[in-house]
Length: 354
Image 1 (tube, rainbow, N blue to C red):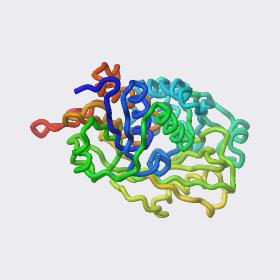
Image 2 (image 1 turned 90 degrees about the horizontal axis):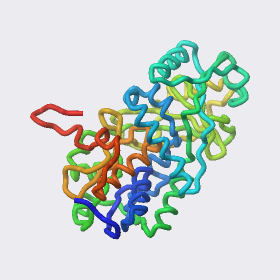
Image 3 (image 1 turned 60 degrees about the vertical axis):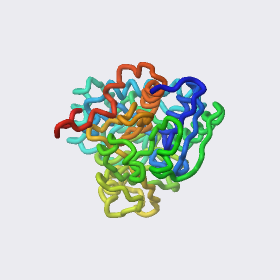
C-alpha cells in the first residue's frame, strides 16, 4: 500500500518522531493530520536534552555502539531540516571530563569507533564550565556532537506543518478509535499501552524512564560537558543535568532515589553547586532490543511505525522521517531502511531475527 500526493494520512504522536515525520509527509504532498495525546512540550522529546551526539552516544551507550555510521548519517540530515524550520543548531561540539580511568577508557572507545577527539587542558575546561572540579585537569573534545533546543524545535515543527497545510488535533486515541480511521496511520507514540495491540512489532519495545534536572540560578556550560554518569549543558537560561535510564519503568513520577547516581555525578563535576534548587523533568522513552528505532511498514496493512528511539530521538528523527515517508509513498527508503525495519524482531518458530 502506498499513498500519493494529495492523499490523507494520520500521524499519532507529537514528539520529535511524529512531528518530523508529519512535516516530511506534508512536504511530499500528503494531507497530514497529527493526533497529539499530549502537547509536544510534554512528550519525552520536550523533556529531552536535544542531543545530536553520534560520537559520545555510541561510545557511552553500549546498544548504540555498532551504529555510528547510521547515527552520523542521521545527524547530517539536520542542517537542511533546521534551515527549513528556521531553528539554530549548536555545532560547537561537546567535551568530556572526569576521573582519569573513565576518561582513558572513553578515549579508547572513541578510537575503536574510528573517532579522534581533541585533547584539551584545564584552561579550556574552566573556560567552558566555570567551577568544574579542579581535580579534572584534562578532557576530550569532539566536533562531531551537536545539539538543538528541543522546545523551540518542536514549536518550529508545528509551525512548519501548519504552513504546509497540516493540522494537529489534541485527543487521547484508543485502539478502537485508531482502527476506525479511514486513512493510512503512522504510529509515533513511543510507549503507549492503549495502542500496543495495533501492531505486533510494538511487543519488542520496553519503556525507559528518564529524569532530568534543571535549575535557573546558574548558567550552563558554554558547550555540552560529559562526565561519568551524567552530562551538563545550558538550556532555557539555566543548567540542565541528565539523565537517568530506568529500564522497565513507565511512570512519570519524580523519584529522588533513582536520581542518586545522577546527583552524585553532577556534584562531582561541580562541587560548589548547591544540592538544593533542582527541578525534575520526567519522560518515558521507548527502546527496542538493539537500541535503534522501528521505522517503516508494520505487518498490519495501512500501518507505519516511527517508534523506539531509546535516547537518540532527536538525532535520528530526520532519518526516521525519511524512511517512513518513503514507505508511505512506495519509494526506496535508502541505505538504512533495512536496518530499522520494524519486522526485524518478528518471531518465527520461536526464534527472533534481528
